[in-house]
Length: 137
Image (cartoon, rainbow, N blue to C red):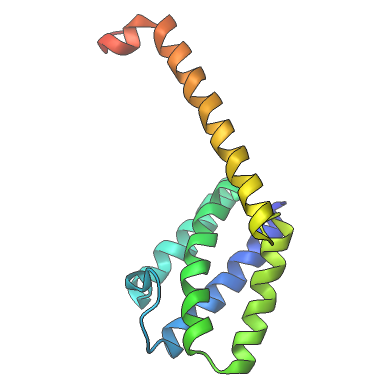
């Protein structure tokens, strides 16, 4: 996913966050994060990551906030707004290869395997650099 696409998704997510703030009436998962004063942490911090060249990393935070907003919209927004946001949400999940439970499971396994490789590499680095463990230079 390129930077421009991530910026489009951030704008969609910010719009969803704003709508969720307007329509929210009922509890939804992680809705304690749906407050106007938290918006800058979500939008501006994500944009800063993108500006620094970390657009892929920003997607983790964007999608987390977007999911929270999406849940509130799915519960409390008018049907026409729900349809618009569901179409956007589904398109992003499809683009990320997370559009079905099966594809989500595959991506989860891939992430777990990658995490294991990173952990093993970190162990190797620490083991071959005893000063890291002792905290000396």
